[in-house]
Image (cartoon, rainbow, N blue to C red):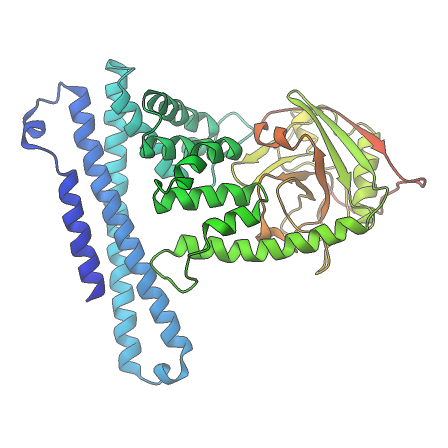
Length: 436
């Protein structure tokens, strides 16, 4: 009964997005009104998709709880009824997604056609920004891989148009809550979290923002390792509230990350005279502190490669928004071979366990293949905390200077030079295994 009431309530809300009869009667030769019509239809279908997705998640959660309940599990009729409802909701969600995707394509095409005729029309730019922000919020990886073709819709180049439109729309009406959110959301695609915080915080502090604004602001604080600020924004979130799963999940991750951050700071406080390396990029210099005490062979390997000029002129070949920036492949320097598959001619053993350093914004870790002990020369910087990578890759350093340059890295950017600034008084000779 509750689900039917929610859907009825959303149906009433959708009446506000209905297209006026006058707009329906306008000939298609008016590109702005045609774009408005297509955009409103997409927004309606998108809200229906969101409602269907929420319903499916709630029913699936209930089903899982019933299966975990030993008493309820004995009642086959109860389980079968719950399973049937969850399956029906999932099918409804899939249908809603298909309709929303089709409407999205039509709206995007109509908006682009309108902008060709009226390139400065602010409503068109606002609608375009909302479409781009929706893709950015879909949970799919957004990035660009070095090569002749970017990754289609998920490339930074693609999203640049969205940010340009969001900026134009926001500049025309800076106190508009929707336009603030759209610009802040698209700034995040380019890892510009601090700018997003500066936009959202005044609105949220005044109590003018929606739940999505508060959630986005909390996410950006989390991305910058500001765990206390993020948790404060989610203080009222009930851990068992199935109606806002994104907020519940973010709060869970934040509590775990804060605990690991405290542990990380304790480990860092014990170390002394750690080796440091400087990477010179075209945008500036990054200084890295290396965790020799916890990952001695990985650090020896890295310093050896730096001192032999291995990393000079190599490029960042894999940069994924809100994830990592990866480099260290000699193929990106020579142009021979596929980017992401090269190495120094050997591999080294993994150095991680339950007491190892963990993945936070600015952490430096070894990139490896699908098998154990397959790291060689490729490494990555974490653009945000990545707790699910803990125990899968060796974290062997962190950025201590130039952290603000991290979000500016793009696929194809070059490491001009790498040099050792400081190291301990002993040879750095790595223990090598056979490898690429």
